[in-house]
Image (tube, rainbow, N blue to C red; front, side):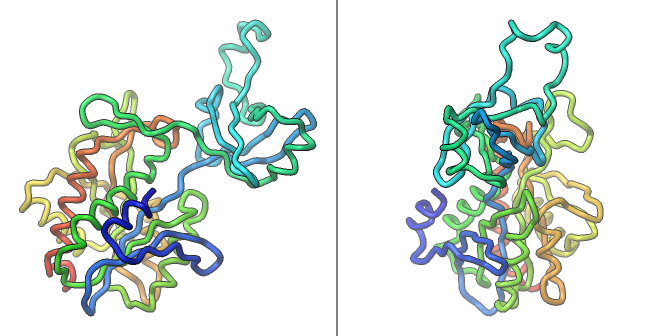
Length: 321
């Protein structure tokens, strides 16, 4: 879908295979001696097939996913061909009152695709991903819900930026990457950034999501509709942060500051390590219910992030740092 969108504005979009066999979507806009990188990961959290039992049920691992949300969900198992399935459980008639009050252990949950074990094992194997079937839907106002807004939000931001900046004369060239494997290893961003180090980039911007305020959330969450957040931490470049902040103040674009420790938990952590070190800034979209099938964000936050970054990239200031 991202590739089809870009084809309306660009002559060349590549599905690239980077070092170590990772793949990603890449494209570029602008001209000039200086180069910037813009990263937004394209993957989302998924269940991972552990084994198929003799009755044809698929047992899974759930990295980064709370097992409590998995019961009774519809998923697609991405084996040699895609198989639609459901996460089953015993009907209430067959469980005790005490069992109803307990969370089902992750190793007791399984996916039922309606196939016999022998046939299923020829299609599905250990390590195959299983993704939520939930599709994007509009809520009230400018809120939307979908699985995988972490990080559809960042990729959508990169598409809006491309649409906005493609017809402009920029101070330099922007290399965009929609990378893979952020949720499991950061390998996609790491290998892509190293492959692009030959372009001698001056700086990078990473777009991801952060925790949106929801019922019972912690003080480390951010309100939806109050703009994107800008990361602050030892991994990130303070001069580039200040350039983006100053532009936000000039444009009256709302934003929040997100304090981060020695790790951001994003692709910034590996991109900054290429060559002799690459300064990077992090912009994030607040998302409620992260790593569930019903993540929620405010489209205004993405639009404000696009407005802000389009002006940042069009200005010579950040290119001269």
